Image 1 (tube, one colour):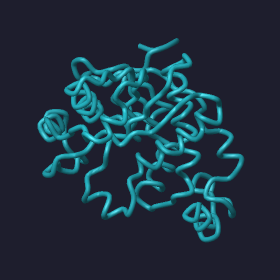
Image 2 (cartoon, rainbow, N blue to C red; image 1 turned 180 degrees about the vertical axis):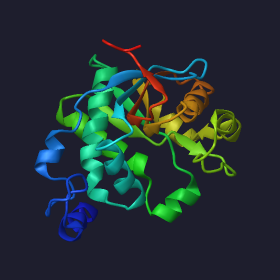
Image 3 (tube, rainbow, N blue to C red; image 1 turned 90 degrees about the vertical axis):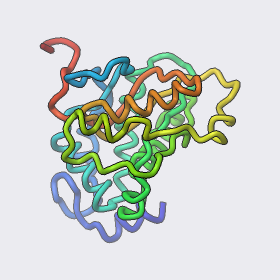
Image 4 (cartoon, rainbow, N blue to C red; image 1 turned 45 degrees about the vertical axis):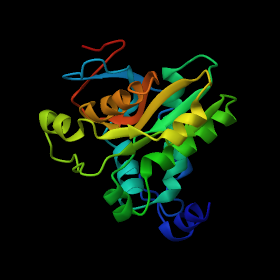
Amino acid sequence: MWDAWLDLALGSSCVTCRDPGRVLCAGCASRLPTAGVRVRPDPEPPGLAPVFVAGPYEEPLKGLLVAHKERRVLGLADPLGRVLAGVVGSAVNDDSDLVLVAVPSRAAAVRTRGHDPVARMVRAAVRHLRAQGRPATGSTLLRQHPGVRDQAGLDVGQRTANLAGALRVDPSAQRRLAGRWVTVVVCDDIVTTGVTVREAQRALAAVGIEVATVAAVAATRRRRAEGPGSA
């Protein structure tokens, strides 16, 4: 709450329309997506769970994600969490207990940015889901092994090699989940090639945790969307 108050007090303008005031004005907030659409990476990593996103990685979602992630406009975590909650609700439309698992950022990136943006958005998404009456918790199940490079600029093959075996499940977090009948959703901010979320799914499957679906705020345009009018 303190970080969000600082954004309000010092941010001074809407990230999207630049009008003075909140970091996201009421008008721009009301136009954000409230549901998700099924997409497929192209090429799709074998065995990837169904992927749902709110929209393409372009404005307004792109501007919000970049400001939150790189400029540390932390007041955007709540509206981005609301968007992510809408995606999760579209992906899992029953009343099962949801466990949202954030794809972890590299430790070096967290130190540089001063926060873990995906984990922050997941916490906000859990709050919004609970407010809608959906049983939901966030879990820090995944950890990164050291030595993982920044994915920016890597092609599909390089991303696959970079992330092979990069994630593991934290034993203490796994124990807290033991014995619960839950629907596990892997969450990320952006889906590009699908390699990152597929590695998260692999690490969870390695300890017997089945991933029902993947939810993200946005996807790059290399995706095929499914639905009316899709190719």
